[in-house]
Image: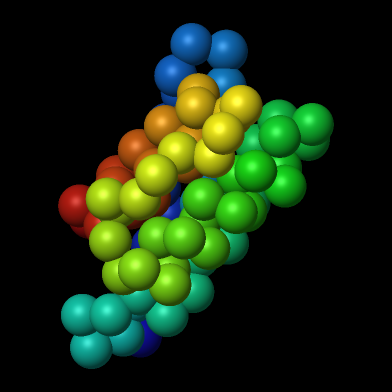
Length: 80
């Protein structure tokens, strides 16, 4: 199993995620750092990626920048 960290800063938001991958499958995503007031939405988007096994998920309504930030952090982790 690989534990991979990914991070990104987009505009005013910064996100750090830990992605656990085993046998080319995402088995867990943990949002380690994000703006506290948007943490719930950040965790929701991470959950969508995990359940769909894809970065191609719909943004959380009202939290597009949060969604974009978390998705990019996950993408950066998976590129490693």
